[in-house]
Length: 354
Image (tube, rainbow, N blue to C red):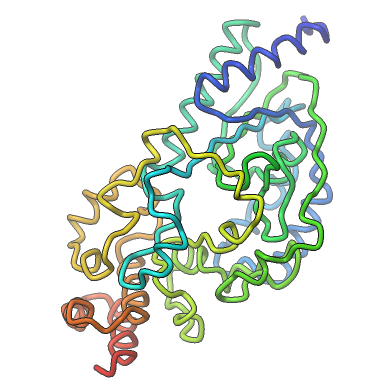
């Protein structure tokens, strides 16, 4: 039997408390309307800006229709979780330490999928205990779900010009998760866009990947190049990558709203193995066995070992030519991977050691 509106409102209020108890900083509800977002995605795909991320095209239709992904869906519950740990070296400091590896701050600890998805499941279980069985599925960047437009509709923030969601009281250093459900919960209102005339994120991008407001060319984006892209990094972009070996935080660090970013209390997001400040040469000498051991349960695994070495070779080519840097590069001059060898030779040439 359908729940009355007053009971649905009460359940939503309780959900916010349960979500906070599970470590989420905010929960909102949206009636999914993705026509505009789908049109934007289609135009972006038609321009080839997705690079080699072919799965975006293959599952495009599902992204625009949550009810096709989870039959019966009438609402999307969106949650966010802050990830920036206070003890991690701040971005500007690591950016200026060119001999050290810059790893995107969200990836320094445990994989967020493993943190957030079980907690979303616990939230769903708690709802079921309160109202009885209901239809739902939970997602954390794990299916064709347009998480940012849906979170925007749920009032969690607005889409910034760098295509990252911004929250007025918390900046953008947070992660998103969703519950697609048949519960007709009262929706939240979307918030206004507060970017105004600011273009700090566009100016900050090292490779010019933000080609205009709300337009990101993934083929130039350092996050794409160091994580999703599996081939050679275009030579004309390598110098601009600097010491970034997994992801890039520049556009977010430049955003003035991130002065309101809140430190995360989640211990699982704490940096592991000193990855917030690790020397490039040291990381480049990790064997595959060591890499597998030290990236267990980490989002860094997505780059794969060969991609990790490729990224480090580029960063070493951009680092000061210390004996440690040269020795590390020389140690892989004859690496079994042709991809790694090519980037090593480029890096050695940068140091006059071709």
